[in-house]
Image (tube, rainbow, N blue to C red; front, side, top):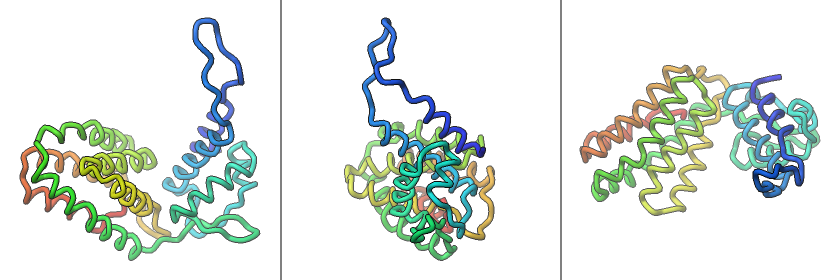
Length: 237
């Protein structure tokens, strides 16, 4: 069983039994099991997509994936519907879900739109925010560096989006954060015939986060603008 499938299956099997607790600790609140399983399967499927275990162009049925994860087809189907909304898969009637085949042009277009949204906002923040505010983002930048050092593509994807969400959240515009995060996630799905992302690529990308925070703290607008534009040029992350 692939790593993500095993993790998901273990987590599903570890759901607490209703009412089970010890005298030394209060009973845990009962959570909707179906929602919990769906969330676990969704994260496992996202990781499998990023790691290439679910290949672009291939069709996967919910029952077969359910057997793979040790759950019924229902939470798999629900998770796949969410992935279809995110552009990672498409529905194939009476067959299942086909992993979307991304083109280099599509990835470049997503990067261009992200740059149009994020670069002006960050430049405005660089001019108006006190330098001390950027310290809040260092734990997020460090998380991207740690995931990159491990070569963990799925964890890096999560940490990368968290850093950009934190950056844009300083604008106070929640709608901007939501739209930019959706574009970011869509840009992370792998190309059909693209190069394999290497650990060195992740490390270099994470280093750009750290360099950006240093430039923002120093209020060096020229360097901030250069780093932001370079970060999106040809970006597949």
